Image 1 (cartoon, rainbow, N blue to C red):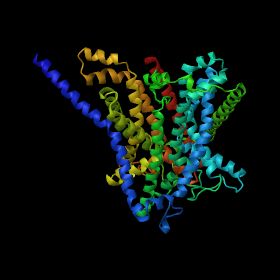
Image 2 (tube, rainbow, N blue to C red):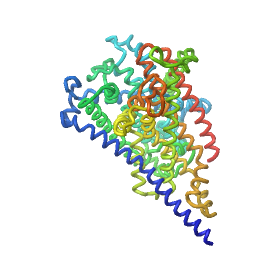
Image 3 (cartoon, rainbow, N blue to C red):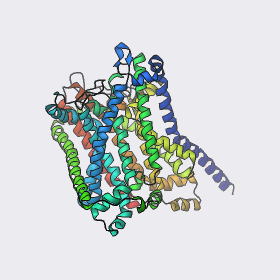
Length: 596
């Protein structure tokens, strides 16, 4: 009897301890977002005192040597390229999604979907190098001023980068509506094309717009790819072939040598960028309150989410104008076919071109040769990437999984605290990587005294991948039937034992999916690591020494100008990694489908 009482007391104490641990992990995102905003603002104060906030934001001249710090040209450059790339990428992404989800034969649909998912994981540095090596020379030949870099080159590269994301999310939203309303539209006398463009597209317009806004958020925060094709002059562009500079490029170009008030001005640029991201997040939050916003998450791909059912049940044909002529619907159908063909061929061309140019130059010396002043090899990148992967994942996985456990297993359905935690988690995922890099440099490298090191880079990457692990693990755990938990508790198991013995094993495939996606993000990251982990060609001596990952090493190869073949080879290796991770993700998702 006493042993049972003692066991019960022990289980209760363990449950309480673990509950507090889960709670602390869950509010970590809130702490990080506040910390980033506070630190960025504090380090921005000197420039605001020096020139004034309005003069800083609306000033037309950026000349640190003359103590002139006006970022309005960079704001205009960011807005220009965001609008143009979103228009291009959003248009092609929308019509590509329509064709894949509504018109493509089933086998072709599967192939195209896999291709789009693959291309969404390609590191931005690869797109940027393709733009520098192929797109810029092409545009130079057709430009009126013999300049290939500029607004057009940057817009095209960004459009190509955001197109797979917009296509994937739009495709999901269209298919979610299709299941419920296609038959009704056909029964009312519509042709297939009329049903698609007169009902399905209109019913999913909020989700489609959300996909475009998400693409816009990535466009305004992109650094490395645009920097390689922009020309990087701090002036307001006059035409499509004018050099320009965005806010992110401004930070990346000058932070390496900036000091004093110049350094404060660059950090203040990040603060203004955060304001732009906040505006985009507010727009997304408003869309989420709309009846027809469909969240794009892992579990929603495999499960009939109750929230989705409720949203759709609130939809009515009375709100939809189905008067789309047959001719107009057919024209839109052929536009979708043409757009999807162009987009897919162009994206595939990038992959094939990189592989064809890069694979022949992959050799033993490049992979395992000694890297020194006379030559750069990838051996330091292999070691540095492995070290950063290990350290980042070993910290981020427990943090993310424990946070998700609290959100799903201990929270109340309509808790305001949980809503706040989710809002901050989503906000953390929307912060540009260059801002994470600044925060990592200010806090981990400088304040903690770690310096530019693999450890500082790893801690920064933990912040970057944490939101993805939390959200996808949460969705996976939510999809596990509550009857399994109830059965375990009814048999006398404690809540913590139920979580670790029943819930987590059932959600293993979904957790692995978040880990695989995180690996892809880590391998492809460059902007956040240059100023935290460093950009060196030497072998790291430990976690407190500097090191360069594959993406950073590729940036170093391309910026040197003497290692073009090595750059293509490194890009090919990154693509092979992406292909492998996508194949692994496909098999994990296939297993997840069988489980549920």
